[in-house]
Structure formats: structure tokens, C-alpha cells
Image (cartoon, rainbow over all chains, first blue to last red):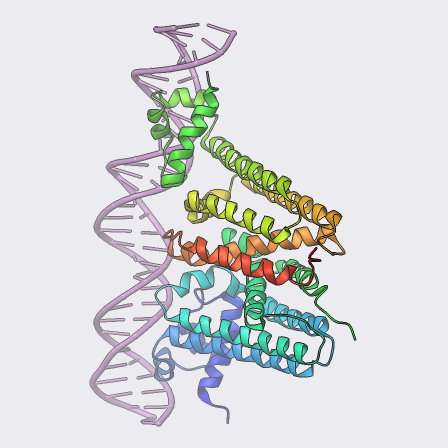
Length: 200
Length: 200
DNA sequence: TTTTGAACAATTTTTAGAAAAAGTCAGAAA
DNA sequence: TTTCTGACTTTTTCTAAAAATTGTTCAAAA
């Protein structure tokens, strides 16, 4: 039998992804599980803890996928990066509602900040690992890998933000923005690595 | 004698830069000019029109400075781009308050969107002009200048946004973020042009 | 150990009145 | 004619209390 906490996370994730953290009540989650709210509180001390676990699950899934892609890398860096961008875009679409007010409203007052910071660091690590492989294999010429990884991570995050800002203002999620993000990220990736790649 | 509208813009700009659009009243602006509010309305039909003119003035100043820097370009692209970054950072610091809630609250319901879009396009044009000069002079090797200009503009905007998000959330302006933005932008610029530059 | 109903506490939403600010206009001053 | 003003109306924002919702706790039952 599946761990009870996992069941809760699963059910909560469904509601959160649909309606957002704010518009999902602990009662609704409990009802979905056909238990009482008090029983839900037996497993989670408060709502933020539950949200945290849900976010960690998503981040772990995404990170796992990215690592798998990086491990597949042979000699085509651009292809690998584009695969990562595509994978991330899938997650963006699936959990687009989190991009909007959700984050903003909930982040304050909760210790979410440091967790999100850790997600970001893991993100940089993945990129660094990929760049290292590319340099070792001789495909890529680059001087400072650490700096490059940070720059790439910041660029990706920045572009993603740039194209969702309109939604944050209006408060209305419009996941067609994901297309814009993907296009922008791929364009930038091409620009950066054009000239750095020693085609074999 | 100076044009009356220019006087108004000048005075309004001072208040706006200090207190933001929201917390500056038409009465205060009129008082600063030692005229009545009704008289102010003789020159500007409403507050958004005034804000628009103020924004246009800032944008024109910034754009003028950028063009001047680009015209100075000889054979050091990185130096020129870093100069532009520094100039923009000056404006960011000066008008940092506009980065916060201000934009968000006022943009909705006003036709500001298309004006801001035009600012952005002029921005891309400046970068394009610079890249063209660099390619012509033989310093830079790049395949698609149009795409590159868009990418560079998006990257700069994205990074700027990325490092001001925390302020937007808290609502408290903290212009020390400008340092982070500048560092990030310069790091990224180095990454991108490393390998593309044919040092003479 | 797990679950529940009932109660309590904190937060959010609503509402209505007051205050502030935006915007208008007939007519005076230049 | 152009520029300006005082008095006025309309719209938006602020405030504070009441109501409703949601988060959280706990003694006791299964």
C-alpha cells in the first residue's frame, strides 16, 4: 500500500495545479481523500508544509528528468540543451498556474524562499555538469564553467519571467506564453553557443 | 521662455521619481507650479497622459545617451556594451521606484502597453545598430544580427526583472538590486561574446 | 496509531460611510 | 483668444466593523 503522505501529495497536487495554492482549501483536499480535515492535519502540521512537499515533488521530478537528459549527452550540446528546454516547458505548461500570483502571494511569510533557492542551485548544478561534459568531450570551448552555468541559469529564469509578467499583472494565466518562452530560450541558446562549439 | 508643458513634465517627473505615480496627486503637481489643478488640466486632459509624457521624456533621454555611446564605438564591442549597461543602471537607480508596484498598478487599463512596446523596439534598434557596426568593422562574427539583437534585448530585460522580483513581492524598493543587475548583465555579456570576437 | 466532531483562532471578504483625488465647467483675467 | 480660477461633480481609495471562510487545535472515539 502506498504511503499515506504520498497519497495526500498526489491529491493536493491535482487541486493546486488546477486552482492554485490560494484557492485550494484544506477541506477540499481532505474531502478528495475522503477523510476529515482534522485527519489531514494528523499528517501535515499546516498548509505551508503540504505546499512545500508538493513543490519538492515537482522539483524532484523535473530535476530527475534533466539529469536523465544530461546523462544521454554524447556530442551535440545544442540538442541536449534544447531537450532540457522542452522538458521544462512541459512542466511550465502543467503547473503554469504556479507562475502567477500564487508564488508571489504565498512566498511572503513562509520559509519557501530558501527551498526555492535550493531548487535554483540544483538547476545550476545540472547545467554545470552538462557544460563540463561538453568541455571534456572537446565539443565546447569555454573559460569559466562556473560563471557560465550561473549565467545560463539566470538567462533562462529571466526570459521565463519576462514572458509571464503580463499574466502576473492581469492575474489571468495564459499558458500560450510558454511558446514564447521556449522560442526565446532557444533563440538565445543558439546565439550563445554559436562560435563556441567545435563541431567534430 | 520654456514651453509650459515642459515645465509641467519637469515638475511632475521630480515628484514621480520621489514618490511614485500613485502617491503623487495632480494637486501637488499644480501646487509645485503655483497654478490651480484646473489650469493643469488645461494642458493635460488626464493623469495618464501626463505620466505618458513623463515616461517618454525619460525614455528619450536614455535612448539619446545610448545612441551617443554607440556612435563612439571604434573597435571594442565589450567596452561599448558595458558602457550602455552602466548608463542604463544610472537610470534604473534614478527612477528605481518605477520598477515596483507603480508599473504594475498603472499599466492595466491604460494604453501604456503599446508605448512601452515602442521603447523596447527602439532598444532593439540601438543594439542592432551596434552589432552592425561591430560586424562591419570586422570585430564581431555573427550570423543573424536581427535575431541576436532581439535576444540581447530580452536577456537584459529578463535579468533586470529577475533581480527586482523580490522588491515587487515585498513592495519595498531596494535599489541595491541595481548592483546585482549590472553584475549579472556584464557576466552574461562576457559569456556571449567570448569566442565571437575577433581581436584585432 | 489513526480518525473524528466540535470548537477556536486567524484570515479573507463584504459592506457602507468618509475622505481623498480625479476630472469638469462657467466665467474671469491676461 | 489663450490662459487661468473657484466651485462643483464624479470616481477612486481608505477605513473600520461585521460576516464568512479557512486554518488549526484537541479531547475523545475507533
